[in-house]
Length: 228
Image (cartoon, rainbow, N blue to C red; front, side, top):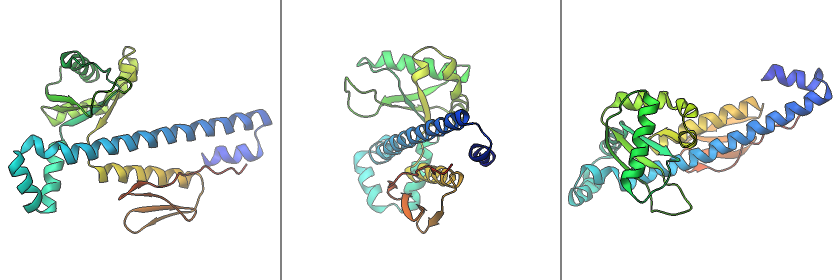
């Protein structure tokens, strides 16, 4: 990227410089869309953690006792264990009939893995809405199938029209996902040759402005440089 920027500023003819600027704009637009998707994934992860993880493993009474008595480390271990076989599917067509969209989930996972994938449970997240497509949380029967599905998710682009609109993501804790976002934003700012400081409490500052924190999520936007 640095070599291309040097060419852009000194050697490329005018029409190629214009094209190069257009490419950089498109890349930044894609980055912003990825940021938005990461925000959605983070919200989904938080929803799962606060509303579903304990409900699937404990009774209502014991869950209440667990929240007040168990140490933080124990709750974090439970959260990690409850997620280790999970994947989240975005873009699965809505249908009030569970068997219909459930069949679609099975077909998607089998296609991605190249073989039959054993599913323990699958359910929609959120309330049904005609204008929205709710994500699907899928709990697989083993960790190996999860790894295979995540690593082969790019195969969806060679699937049918429905599969091409599906996105597969890992079900990760909020802090883990946000640390990945912070690292990506930091890398983008460094590539833009901006002044980057990673402060205390996992906060990212770019050109003196707070952009992101693991605690609160996205605060600002990494703007591309406009030199050359």
